[in-house]
Length: 398
Image (spheres, rainbow, N blue to C red):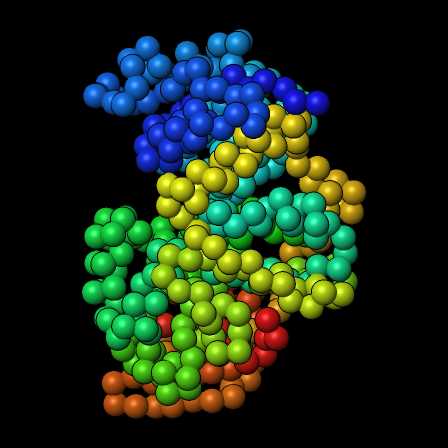
């Protein structure tokens, strides 16, 4: 049975405005935005009476039964979403950092207050990955979820490998086009992909993981030497997030650059697009592809969640609630490429075995097996060293 949604909207940027316009022209369900909370007064496309400047004007309004949160600040988003749930309001959020860092509390608040928190827009933009993992891949046949989850870093790498641009030139283009912020570290250091991976892991394997416990390394240290090495091997480098099922109901996960061969689905994911490969026992590999960022892709995911709320939809968290979830293991060994200039930097890496190495006048590299647990021991140092690391992908079949 449908319910009427009276919406309080937080944020009226590009996505918020687009959402408002879409709702005005969509007769398929009964929903309207009655109040919009913004930070500052300025000339806007709507009349002043639509806007308020204090969060409590929406949160304390009993006539508003749904909150849509579309702001950038994760701390402010946390307080808004928490209070809305406590007030018995349904919530749609796009803030992947807030969700990933506070997921245990978000799960408890939904349960205690018998309300729904939906967040399809928090991961992969227009790709309906969360609800598919929740509803379609809700059995024990799922083996792995691997993907390019950040459009900004993928745009930069596409310009490097397809247009022979330098990292700095490609980064500047991404910033000029609005794909990357003036401080791009959230994207290029892998944190955006990490927070999305945390959310996907919950819906894939029913496991809630602290982002601080996950190996995460981005592309900011990539050099011409690394790019040339990839080209000589006929690879591209992609920033890849992965969660994989291991033996005995364990999983591993990480965010790392990866050398990708032409026969892999994600090889052809270019520019600001995202691509996700879902691998299972019975169906082998399935691939989902689409724009991962931007006003319309994100807005479409927000609208999808609002539509679902109108039909009383809520995540069941089936893997967590009915199967108990999987255990997070850090003992998987991965084959890692480490490019270095100073041999002292290499001493931080406790390889189990070496499969390839090269020593040159300016740059050297070593490839070998190393456990994720060993890399996590030096996780805080990785960005300080004059190195670049990437998973080779040679031992992976997805």
